Amino acid sequence: MRIQPIIGLCAVLVSGAVLNGCATLSEEQCAVGDWYGIGQSDGNSGYSHQRLEEHIEACQRHGVTPDHVQYEQGRRAGLRSYCTPERGFRAGRMGNSYGGVCPAELERDFLAGYSDGQLVHAAQGAYDAAQNDYNRHQQAARDLESRIRTEETAAQAPDLTDDQRRIIRDRIRSLRNDRDRALDQARDAEWRMREAERDVRELRARFAAYYGSW
Image (cartoon, rainbow, N blue to C red; front, side, top):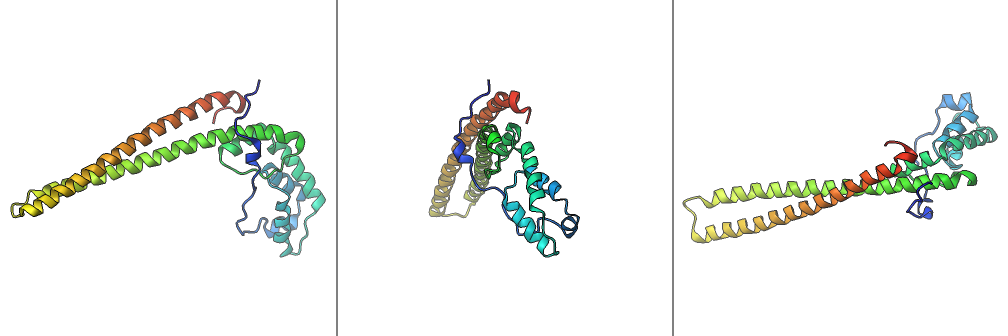
C-alpha cells in the first residue's frame, strides 16, 4: 500500500512557469506550425494554458497565428505523460512549482508524488543550509585564530608599554571568545547537518520502491 504524503496538497497549488522575456518559439517553429507537437511538448513539461498566449505573442511578429485546437489537443496528450506520481515526485524534489495543470482524474496521484518530493526537497534544503552554516562558522574560526596569532606575535615586541600589552591581551581575549563562539556554532551546524543527512537517507529508503533511485 502506498505511503500517504505528509504535506498538505493545497500548499503546492502555486504559480507555474516563470516568464523570462524571451520568445517561446523561433520564426522557423512558427512557420512549420506543428501545433499538436508543440502542445504535446508543452504538456509534457507541465505548462498551463498561458503558454499558448506566449506562443501567440512570439508568432505574431512573424505573421503566424497558432492553431488553438491542435495545440490544446497536443497539450492534453502531453499532460498525460507529465501528470504521473513519478513526475510529481521529481517536480517536488527539484523544488519546482505546480500550476494546477493536471486533469482531475490524474491530479490526485500527481499531487501525492509531488508532496512526497517536497519532503525530500525540504530535507535536502535543511542539509545544504546546515552545511553552509558549518563551513561559514569554521572559516570564521580559522580567520579569528589567525588574528589571535598575529596579536600574540605583536605582544612579544620588546618596546611595548604596559598599557599597550594590556590592550593587546584584552584584544586577544576578545578574539578567543569570538573564536570559541564560532566553533560552538560550527558544532551546532554539524549536528543539524547530520540530522538532515539522516532524514534524506531515510526518505531515500522510504520512497525507493515508488520512485526508484534518485
